[in-house]
Image 1 (tube, one colour):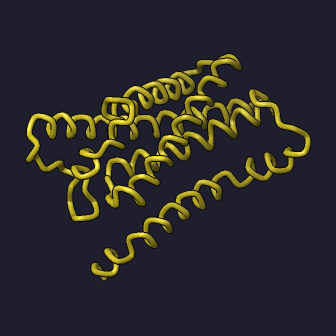
Image 2 (spheres, rainbow, N blue to C red; image 1 turned 90 degrees about the vertical axis):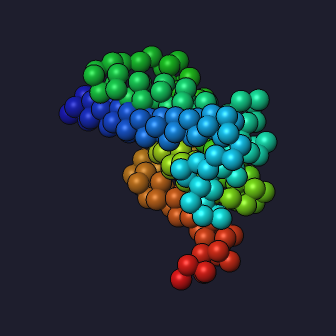
Length: 201
């Protein structure tokens, strides 16, 4: 019974990583193509620049869009390709060692941290939202949450005794955690840009 349960959970993380990785890859790839077009033609209007607030072009021209000296979207293209490949490998029956899962965990920690830094910059400093970036934000959250919960459940990450109840709660309410996480970000965006949203009502 435990073996069957473990196999089911193992396959679930595979589908989550594969689906989110593929969606994230395409969003990052489109952003990269749009960035290249913008470099070639500064007057080019990206397909995701659809309003004064929802404007990828405005975001792409900021220093925050190239933190490491190249387009942030290239990190997404590479990172989501790896995530999607891992997911499809798991679905196909691949098994990975603990060190591999810990490596993936480190990657997701970097990803979720970087994404939330970008959210802060986009909302509070740049004052513009990039639709394709929002897609990337959206898939990064479940990738991080379910990778972490998987590692906690199967012992890849050791849980201190005093945090076992927290882990148990998270394992039971994983869907609620993701939804609440989304709602907090949506709430911040709605509140901060309410001056714009109310003009649409």
